[in-house]
Length: 80
Image 1 (cartoon, rainbow, N blue to C red):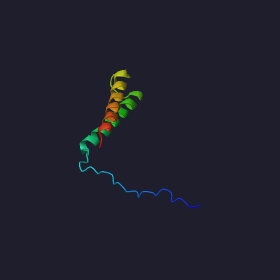
Image 2 (image 1 turned 180 degrees about the horizontal axis):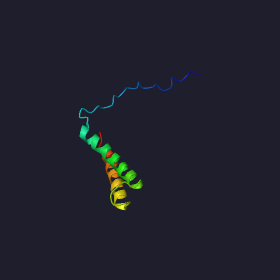
Image 3 (image 1 turned 120 degrees about the horizontal axis):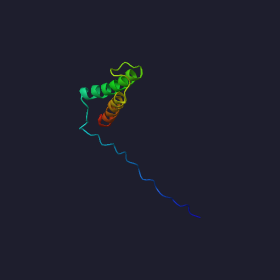
Image 4 (image 1 turned 90 degrees about the horizontal axis):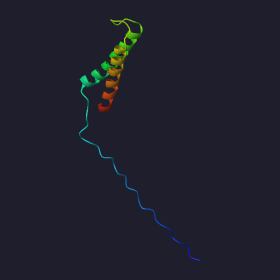
């Protein structure tokens, strides 16, 4: 009985990924501002809890510290 030849495999071609020439780079001031806001937020919250802020412990300082941290983290979404 004759033997079947079967299917031949097609040769695979390697497709190189497209490299974008317009790479975005964030300016240095953006990175510094991002981390500074996060650090100030943490510092305000810590100073509030050890009672070193003027006016005693107030929730306004906690909210402003959390707001600064949140803005810093939101800035990370646009960081390139």
